[in-house]
Each structure stands twice: as C-alpha cells, then as structure tokens.
Image (cartoon, rainbow, N blue to C red):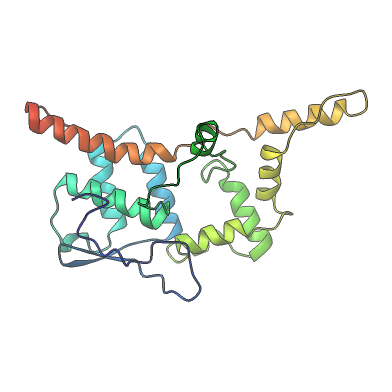
Length: 230
C-alpha cells in the first residue's frame, strides 16, 4: 500500500471545506469502509503523540491508527500498511496536501517557498486559542471536544478577529521591526521583547511525514538484512 496508489476512495472529502459538501470522513480500504475520528481534539492529540519521545515509531503508528479509525477492528493490516494509511489520512484529511506536483519555480524563490514562515503553534498557543474562541464565538473549546470537526476548527481559527489575543500575537510575530531612532527606541525595545516572548520553533510539519517515511525505510532495511525495526 502506498499513499499515492493505495486501495482508498480517492473521492473522499479531503480538500478544503466547501459549504456544498458533506464532511464525509470515510475511506474504503481493501473493500472495508473505515470511519475516521476527525474531532479537533483527537487531531491535536495525534500531533502531541507524534512528538512524544517515549514511544517508538512503530508504537506511534499503532496508536495513531487506533485513534484515527473508529472501526479499526474491522480490518487487519500490517504495521507498514497502517503507516501508509495513517500518512495518507494526515496528507489528505488533516494537512490538506495534494499529490499533484507543484509548478516549477525559479531557483531564487525555491528555498523561500519551501519553508513557509510559521506564525502559530497549536500547542504553545493553546491558551491564546481558547481565550480567542471564547471572545469571538462564545465557544468553550473544552465543551466541544469530540464534537467540533477539525476542518471547522481550522476555519474558525483562521476567521478569528484581529482583536483576539491569538491574532494579536500573530501580528507581533510577523510585523517588521522599525529602524531604531531617538524617537522610537522604547517602542522598538518593547516590540523586540514581545517577539522574543512569543518566538516559535521551526515548523515541525515535515517531522510528521518523516515518521512514516522512516518507518517504511526501516521495514525495507529489515527485509533486506534481516534486522529488527522499532
């Protein structure tokens, strides 16, 4: 099974949300309809699990498969096929990455376009997100666990107003620092302090797919050399 050529229903609703579509969170794998748990809190736990160093890649894949597929007991898959399936779900249902090749770009722009600037972190900014949803939508996200779909959560997150704490912090992270002069020295110092306070680590999206790719490489190496994988 591969993510690009797997026995999955390619017509599943995996692109950006459309108001004319149903949120059909199902896949057909080996003739079995698999129902996916796309609640926003479940997806957030997947990201947390991916970064947890207490688990091996194999253990992560097993847990992710069980967390994502509600009726996981209806199908028997190898750990490698589970890795491919979980990777497919991440690509198509969570990260919204497409298989189509991107148009070629000039060499000068390739490096910049391949590493988009990270403006928020769903884990580090959890308090800001909670407060902002409460402010703009009167939504207590804890009360919506298991109910609010991941795509709805992302749409609401993107649509938060500029007055919310979340959007204000993004503005701090993305705004340019003016050149210091005798008139704005205090303001520049304040902005620099805020930027340091809210600074984020480098984007970690690639590491998600690295988990699947590294596990696949381990199985290939094991098959060739008779080694063990973990």
